[in-house]
Image 1 (cartoon, rainbow, N blue to C red):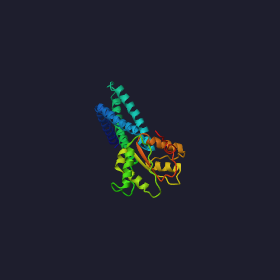
Image 2 (image 1 turned 135 degrees about the vertical axis):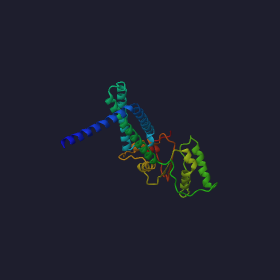
Image 3 (image 1 turned 90 degrees about the horizontal axis):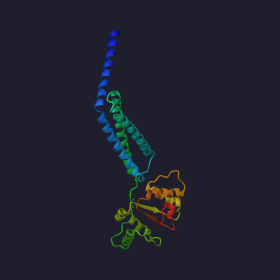
Image 4 (image 1 turned 90 degrees about the vertical axis):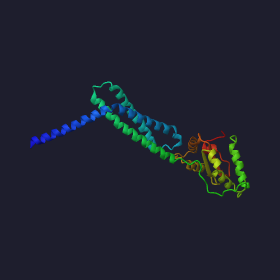
Length: 268
């Protein structure tokens, strides 16, 4: 009985050793191919990371995205270490076990790189979906073609075409449908083509600098949690908009408003 048990155990070990040898041979055979696949996957990961970093001002940099970028940099270093090992050992053909281990490690790392890249693409798609729409349409009375109010809208559109004009005021007594004119401007297809962002803010008599900022932050989907200083918030709004062409429509304005304080912008 003991002899039979020993023989069975020896057979299992031989079987395991045989499988191990087969795997080693397979890894050695695929050494160059595994290296090339890893380099390709690493290049695609780097391109994904660079694209995200290049466009980072468009996105809300979430904690998960920060972690993804940090992990990408770690993976790039690990790939670089494997590449160095491969370059150093590929000339030493007698170290078969070492080369097989490198080939195995490259296969595992290749899968890790691919999965991490796919995760980054998914996060990027989610971030793009969370971006504010260029124009948020407002339900309003549509002005009839060639009506007096429609002509006002056309005049304002003409002013918006003039890059020398930075501010336009639509003035009048209460009840003179100024808001309707503004709403039709907001919804106009030409405005959507002219500007990257159209921001509508209802000011009202009870306005404050922070209330205006909060309305703009909400429109732009900006998170400034923990920031209470008006100047810091203005700086954050400025950073979001500085590379964009935008139109801000302020409705129900009763007092002078300093947009430099609210949004960090000036006459330039």
